[in-house]
Structure formats: structure tokens, C-alpha cells
Amino acid sequence: MTLIQILQIISALATVLIGLVAFFRADTIQGFTGLTFPAARGKVEMRSIFGGAFIALGAVPFFLGAPGFQALGIVYLGIGIARAIGTLVDRSMENSNLISLASEFVFGIILLL
Image 1 (cartoon, rainbow, N blue to C red):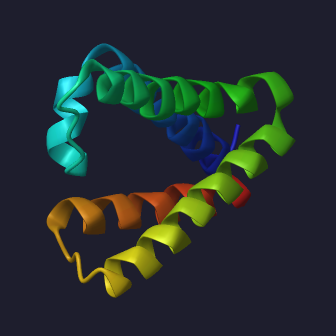
Image 2 (image 1 turned 60 degrees about the vertical axis):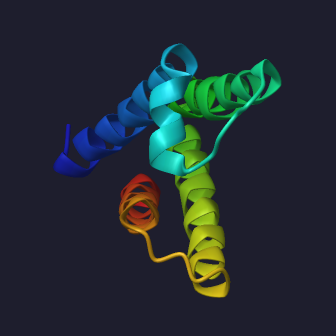
């Protein structure tokens, strides 16, 4: 196993971990993302989108192999590009945005190698 393959596995597992935290500890994600949910409906969205989607996205490479890792990389780059544009347009240079932006591009590139 190469270093790149190990980093790809770590990236996919980190995605699953983010999803698990979002699903089981939605309140903790609220502080990092800046999203709030004054009603239970918002918490359900946090669990389903940040939780369920990230768990599934991170698990896909373990079922599909190389194409799954590449698909996850494309998703991360898409999120990163959207975040970069949004950060500039909305003038939101907060640390959490910059941390997310960096990790999305790093994960995206690693997963596409």
C-alpha cells in the first residue's frame, strides 16, 4: 500500500467521522458551521445532510474502490470551489471557513491522485 492510498483511506474515514459527529452530536457542528436550528426540523436537516450524506460519501470508496475515492475527491473539490466563491462573495473570512476550505482542497486532491 502506498502513502497516497493510506492518505486516501484516512480522508474517507475522516469523512465518515465528520458524518458520525454531525449525526450523533448535531449541536457541536452548529457552532463550527455557524448554522443554527431553532426548531427540531433544522436539527433533522443537520443530521441528514451533514450526518447521513457524509457517512455515505465516506463509505462509498470502500464499496467501489478507486472510482469511489475519485468520486469523493470530486465532491470535495466541488464543495471547496463553492466555498471559495461564497467566502469571497459573502466576505466571510472566518477561521472555520478557511479551515474547511483548506481541508476540502487537500482531501479533494489526495482522493484524486
